[in-house]
Image (cartoon, rainbow, N blue to C red; front, side, top):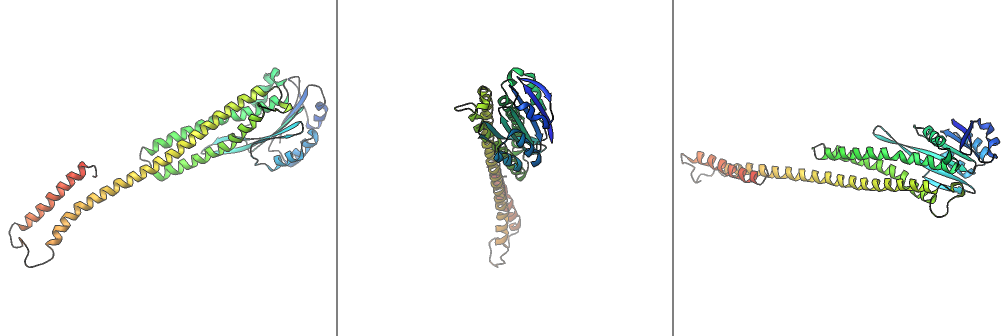
Length: 321
């Protein structure tokens, strides 16, 4: 679906144009066309390929989707794939932005993404002195907006980890804690798959040989690279904390099992003493000590109670009971 098709010249918006009129503006000096598609169909991508002369391999990748974040050069044009991450309830929605950039055009195709990029276009139009840098600045603005949306997701995951950590030490069911921690680790992996390769992509646009279409925007892409560096560091730190939390949870389970084993052993000892004494006097031998004594029964009971009381005291002192 076509969202926008706008022509710009010298950093200023000329007009919203029909896609059939794109070719009229491509050869104008200082002019470029920015087209935005949502869930673009193969037919729409074929139309844009004819208008902008897009490389067939890039169009094929955009049509199939589910690409790894990357940056590819085709002559004087660029093809970038960036993953969008949105927190929807308990799950992460992973979308995809395909960006085709040439000297006189920008084609952005977003797939499986709920939040749009109208604010990015508005931001660019508010800064004509930057938009005057051309299509390279639009590429920066789109990638920067996507990277900025990673930060709230990362903060949500940090809050989720803190909640699970509180549950671990509040006696919540261990199985439920491990399930939540593993789900959190999966989310961090999805975010890492988006931010990790994108950091490498941003590095290609500010250091060393920079594509001609991005000339003059290196400082802006360096800022994106710094943001991605921080994000990837935070992801790695969170993954380590999740792994530690899982280990702590398993350790608490082991400690709980040990405490249960000690209690069972203590109770078994308390039961064993009267069982032993009663077992001796239940063997029905004729000649047994104190068998005919009038105080034999009270003495046996007193022995049972006395020994058990002593054992209970020692177990309680050792924190076994």
